[in-house]
Length: 548
Ligand code: G6Q
Image 1 (cartoon, rainbow, N blue to C red):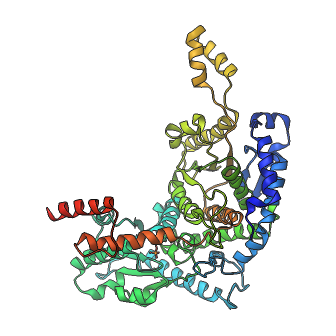
Image 2 (image 1 turned 30 degrees about the horizontal axis):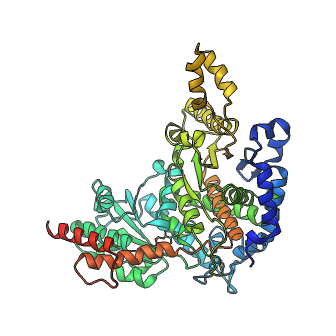
Image 3 (image 1 turned 90 degrees about the horizontal axis):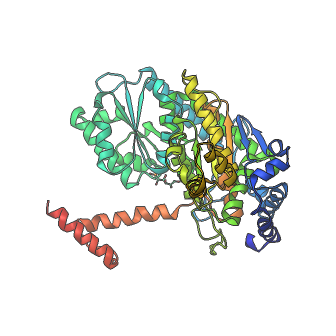
């Protein structure tokens, strides 16, 4: 494929950007009473207002032309049809099969994957129901009260996010997530638990990840210190993995293994058996609703015309800011405390998928790819980093998300939350002119130099773009649609940049490097000489370690 930045569509967008850059959103709204109607879209439970973006009708036409140039529609079909879109690992990325509904087959190399998907879903249902109902007993005959998921990255962030977003506290089980190899993570969690009533889910696609295996071994030692006989491990340790042999090697009965497959990427795996802690926390019916919501979004993404396609529009708007305005970061700001882990999960989806600098063919990419995704729940951020959003120099496109209904009986809290959700994008868009600031200050009695000195500090340039995403309430189905929306948005951008969204060699590098240095910490010779800084640091750490 030829580089997209060499196409007429790209050149047209560059030229168009020069015309749009001086336009102020305030004027675009004033001039065009139909802007909100035209630049809003409903997809299932999600309502997107993208009218506060620095775009005109022509911008969207040109961005869609760019998408056509990149053959986006054909790539979407390739994704759903199980083609090997992950070229470097020669794998499909069929996470959409995990949430597929109905009886139609989903073929991978001519074989229907759905019987396997359904078999594992059924296994998850039986198991989660027996643990939740108290039928599943620990080694002393007591029911399970606490579940500890041990996993990292894709085997942690997704399930941990969904469990906190779906308000799992009301279920019969307490869920804990241990990911960091820093022993503080595991010991802090185990401190309050009783081995007799604790179930460990060891979640690892490869079952070779250093952090997870070390945490799992330490958890087993902790368990056996009380339980004594290793035969009891079977009632307290289950595994989620693609690697049966490794699971057996660890000592978990394969009957207690929940399988998934190499065509499921780690950051796209919460829909697979990696979602077991979700089913344990909120029940299999709600896990199923989560899958159904994601499937609704899959259908919308696959079937809607590009111009009325939510992940496509959000992806193209991202490209507009990253490639034509030089934006380097993007904020995600959910006005829902339960979504406090949402940003970390989407951050992984986006930054691991788009953090690439060569094309699918291995040539250097000719334009910027990806952006730093950050953010957190509103209103907290308003008292912290929003200052930079309002008055800083970088352009930070922001997504504001909010449920219309609260899940708590504290209705007044929710009205305050919603008023903030509405106020911030408006302020970012409108800004405040010098005349408005003067008028405001005069009303406080300030005048002359004292007033003028303050004016530049209290002006807001505005014209800062945002999307607003509203949904009735954050139930499982809606959350499924929201996560799938960001997954597909990320895929759209990868198609435009012609990069592989489904490999992660940078993550693999981290795994490799740490293994090598671990042996050197114990005085074993290294495989390759280090630079002076690393050798110096290694020697420093070694001397202090042995000094203890
Ligand atoms: C996700 C990444 C990465 C991975 C973890 C854990 O896409 O590949 O975050 O999920 O490194 O890997 P395992 O599940 O194999 O332990």
